[in-house]
Length: 162
Image (cartoon, rainbow, N blue to C red; front, side, top):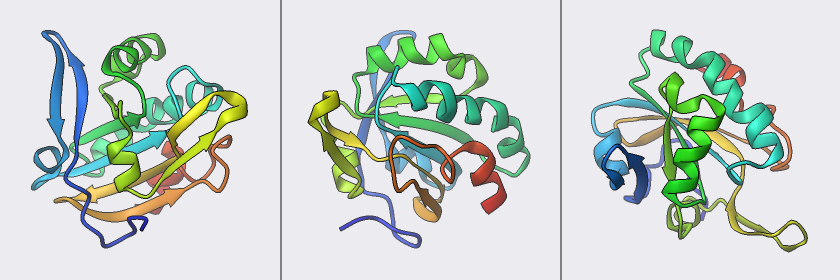
């Protein structure tokens, strides 16, 4: 069953590549008592993810902070090393976006948002969506009907929904 507005996030662990190497990140701890934005996408270095989705949150991160958002996080079914390199390559890390790997897709599956597209080599990947989470509860959720586009899940669209 897919998580929707009003639901509590699944208690998942993701991995972040920090200065000392990979570190486990418990979403329940990251969201407790905080207002965060989490956007998820099919894969690092893929077309729409690199040219539209991540750049939209780089452009809008300061506006989210001005609206009381404590942290903006990007989740993808990739390992933390790929997410770290991609965050550096896109400027997302420098902008303050936390890049989190869901290497085994456990969070993505628990969210009810996994898909597979063998013709392009994507297995157990995340659909494209963005959400606002307050104290662990989803308050806004916008998901694309097609993972190849970034309309309702982009930074500007999510800001409008706040």
